[in-house]
Length: 394
Ligand SMILES: [Zn+2]
Image (cartoon, rainbow, N blue to C red; front, side, top):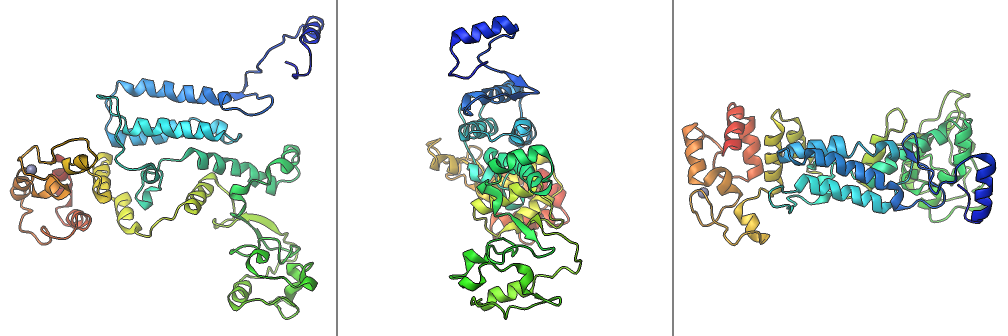
C-alpha cells in the first residue's frame, strides 16, 4: 500500500526489497475496515451484505409481524453496532440499513411487495410513545459515538483521547445535551453551558462589555448567589433559574461535564438516542394509552394487533380500499357493505355472535365510545383475558 503520489515502479521496487506485498486495499482489522483516504459508502458494503445474509436465513420461515419486529430489532439493528460505536457511517449506509429493516418488517413474502401499515416515523418511535421501538440507524450511530465523546470529555489524560479531541469534539449533534456541573466555578458565566436552558450568551440579547470575562465563581458571595455586581440586565425568569442552581459546598470539587438528562450525569448511548429522537421530532403527550399497552400482559402478536387498532391502521377492507389495494371495501365474512375497524372487531355478524356467546354483549360500555377506550375498558374488566383471546380469534 502506498499513497497515490508514489509511482508504481517505486512501489514494486520497495516490495521486492522488503518482501512486503503491495495491496490496493488494507482489508479489515478486528472486523473494522481499514480505510485510507475518504470514507466511502462502498467501504460499508460488508455490513449491508451481512445484514442481507442474515435475513436470507429467515426468508423461508413464516413469521408474523410482531415476530419480525422483534427480530428486526434484535438482529438487524444490533449487527452494525460494533462498527457504529467507532465510526461515523455515511448517511447513504444508514439509509440503506433502515430500508432493509423496513422491507423486512413489512415485506409480504407471498407477493414480494410490501405494504407499510405504519409510517417509518411511527416505527422508530419509542414504544412508550406508541411506536414499535425500532432504532433509526443514523441516531443510533451518533448516540454510540457519544460514548467516545463522553470519554473525550472525562478522561483527558488518555493518549487516544488527546489525539481525537481536536477532530471530534466539535460533534454538533450531541453537544447541546452536555452541560457543566459546577465545582470550583471556573467557567464563563456567558459562554459555557452550566444552566439547563443553555448558554446565557445565546439567551440574553446583550452582555455588557464589562462583564464578558466574568466567571461563575465571581457570582458567589459566601455560599450565596449575588448577581448585584453584574452590569448586564438579567430578566427575572433567567434570574430565578440561576438562583435555583445549588452552589457546591465542597471547595475541591472540579467543574465537570455531565449529560444533562441523566440522574448520575453519565452519558449512555440509550440516553443519547432518546434525546436525539425527542429533539428531532415533536412527540405528542398522549402517552397514556401507549403506556397501558407497553405494560399489558399479553403475547406480542395480540399487542401488535391492538397497536394497529390504536393507530387506526388495522388492515380492514375499508383501509385497503382507501389505499387502492382493493376495489371492494365490503366485509368478506358477512358481505356487509363496509368493513371498517368497528365492523371488524365488534359489529360484524360473525364477531357479534362470538361476543354474544361469551356474554360480552349487554355489559356496560360494550356499545359506543371509541375503539381505544373500548379496548382498554374491556381488557381492564374482570373478563380481560377472555376478551383478548376473543379479539385475537375474531
Ligand atoms: Zn362482517
